[in-house]
Figure 1: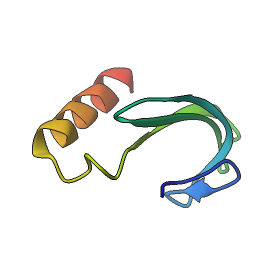
Figure 2 (figure 1 turned 60 degrees about the vertical axis):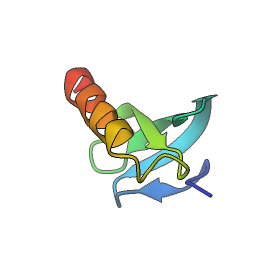
Figure 3 (figure 1 turned 180 degrees about the vertical axis):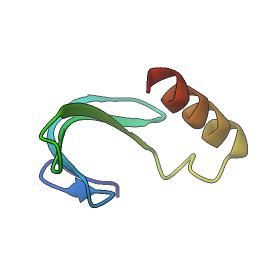
Length: 66
């Protein structure tokens, strides 16, 4: 089971709302506890977390969106 609303991930992002869920994972609205910025946090489903092609896709997406 992955993070849930109310969790703090990476010791930095407080998950405040679940925005969506799909086969690849979940997207949360979060708040950066350091800066107060509102952010989107995407988590990867444990069922695909060990598949290299999904990891590469996830990283590419994160790089583009950052």
